[in-house]
Image (cartoon, rainbow, N blue to C red; front, side, top):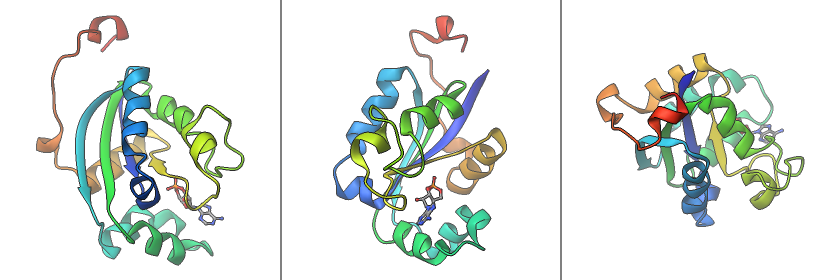
Length: 150
Ligand code: CMP
């Protein structure tokens, strides 16, 4: 099934000049970029984005970290894009993430884990809606749309 998923390259990923590496890996895999923006997200938006973690001990630290500098928000599309991107990103805790994944290759901690990606279709819909208007999402053909079932 063709899915859309939301990805954020966090302030540590931007600070370490890893944006291009993240985009390159998703493109090389065959995913399609349909939305992209850069901003320092507000505390209010960060709190909405991470609402499910409100009760966790690390919540206030997470909100300060994600708002501490510019981050890049993206929407990627492709067959099973949600699971495919989570596989490319690796486990949340960078130290547990497999080598060959973004977090496994570049991360050292659970908080500074470079990227965030949606974990389900429902989360993807909610997160895309928080950061993008439908008019900001591009519809365009790719040469391999046919063979990918797009
Ligand atoms: P993310 O996929 O953005 O979703 C929630 C984030 O909380 C997670 O990645 C980590 O960056 C962060 N996180 C999860 N567990 C911890 C923890 N124990 N301590 C600090 N940050 C955490």
